[in-house]
Image (cartoon, rainbow, N blue to C red; front, top):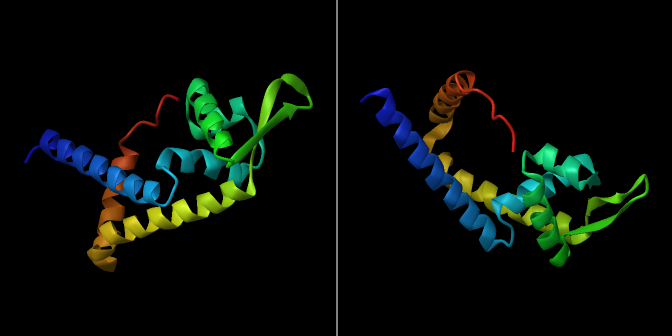
Length: 143
């Protein structure tokens, strides 16, 4: 096999893993994309939408749409920024914290189901390969 063929197999498998994890998380009520937004808020606390976009590596317009949907579902709340009346501060709600925990648990369960069968040695070997690939891959340019 050549590098291109292995690379394409990796990309296809990464897509399948992501889709399987996302489907399990959606079944628990929270997609991977929504989890990413809530995780940033859980880790950093309330943020301006622009900061949330930067922290999550997401385009500002996409964050606006995500925050609107999360707010409709009661998972986040927005309030005017006291220092800048044009900006909004986004904060996680109690329901958002609960949804994040449930979605994260479902995602972790899916990952254990996919990777758990590799065993300790297999996981270590895969981790080494992923480290080697990460070292050769440039970081993303932005959202």
